[in-house]
Image (cartoon, rainbow, N blue to C red; front, side, top):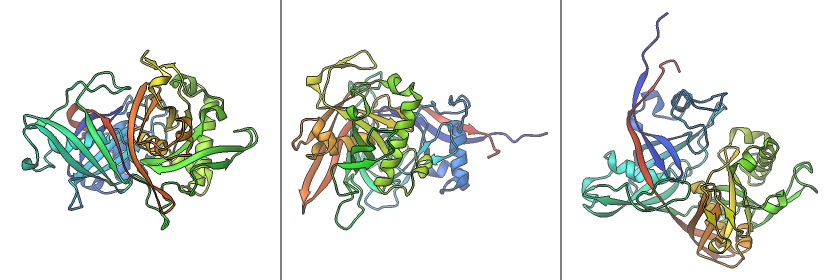
Length: 399
């Protein structure tokens, strides 16, 4: 029996924020994978090593966590006023699907550097030293991101002293602007809050929540997100990964609540559909500031944060915070009356510093009330990015 040699595909392995993923130039993919479809999904799954019933990704480039089972496809922008198009795929670890429904805010930080280093940006636009602004079209959610990338001697600056909780080593700071991050649905501009309310009451089975009623803020900013008070689920808001990820009943409850929230947001019609939409919406718990010990051993003092947030990603508690969820936190925190805002002490604010399992993060959001509807023009946060490896990935030619 004869076997074909593996396919060899140019690729770059990058860390962006607290995530890492395999980046491809669209034109480097096999012709059949240069457009959406089953072949593209199968190819990317095999590269990552999914679906893996062992949840290890031993035979692929993935890291067997939601933060490390990711792929990105970059192409010259189809829009005349943007530099590149950025398509993100969240690869399920032990299940057979690729979720294209949302963005990865963390890997967004790596898109600008990748675009510069791979010839997508005109040379005369890149300064010898300074910052270059890369205008990115986020193809999954049809939104604009502007990445301000530092340049030294005409090359992307990767090393620096910017420290990001959840990332072991410092690097150069990259500021990201998420332009008009709210959902545009609805003629009444209610897309930011899909129900039109800053707080809703979810009706859920009593085995999930005593009494079957649960308050939640449902927001479409950065990524669709469901915010719930930690205490209403019996948590403090200071939990680290093991406290939740080692509890199968807790994970099942979060997933069930996420499904009910997704229906309320109009993202799915029935809770059964949530199984094939794990990337969106996110679900998170919020609490007022308390002292706690981060996963690194760093002491986080209540006086140094506005609010505590723990967020689930692909069915598990995230080790830090998803970048898109951070946009949702910043936006919800800026708007009076949301559960995030109330946990932070109430009032309108332009920045929110929140505590997560690995430390803290500050996000800025510009929100204003226009004709009785809250709108957000942009959210801003800083990340970093670094090339980990570049060359080619190999994948069996039997997809």
